[in-house]
Image 1 (cartoon, protein in one colour):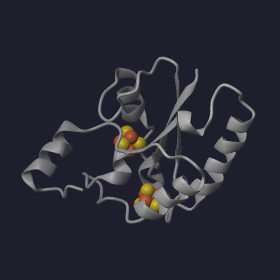
Image 2 (tube, helix red, strand yellow; image 1 turned 45 degrees about the vertical axis):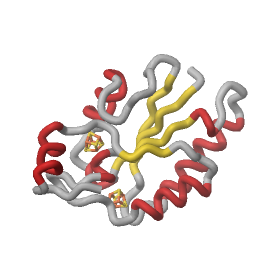
Image 3 (cartoon, rainbow, N blue to C red; image 1 turned 90 degrees about the vertical axis):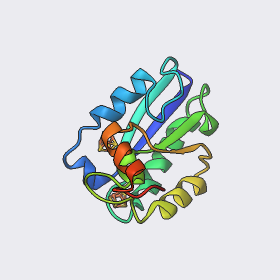
Length: 135
Ligand code: SF4
Ligand code: SF4
């Protein structure tokens, strides 16, 4: 496998979510996942809790492993910020620390960042109708 799709979940959401729907969307090529799952490794971890600074240590660890792997580098990694982090949804509004987290990701040399993962049709409908905010 020479690519990685790395999902960062909201740590608060992770207390009650296994990440099942994100994983499902990845393998079905749905939601924001357009990459073929073939030849792509799926990884996920949480932001570590507010304000998301733990992402730095976790990405450092990923970078360290990549340096030891001749077949893959940072350009081959796409980081997905999970929908629970990036949208207004049933549980809460968009993470207020998104820009900080994105800055940490860039600082660690990862350029490919996509907002969103699995997309709930119901929540998307509420965003369209104005009940939930759109970003
Ligand atoms: S920093 Fe954002 S994504 Fe992380 S736990 Fe807090 S609200 Fe959730
Ligand atoms: S987007 Fe949904 S399925 Fe994915 S980690 Fe967040 S709460 Fe879980």
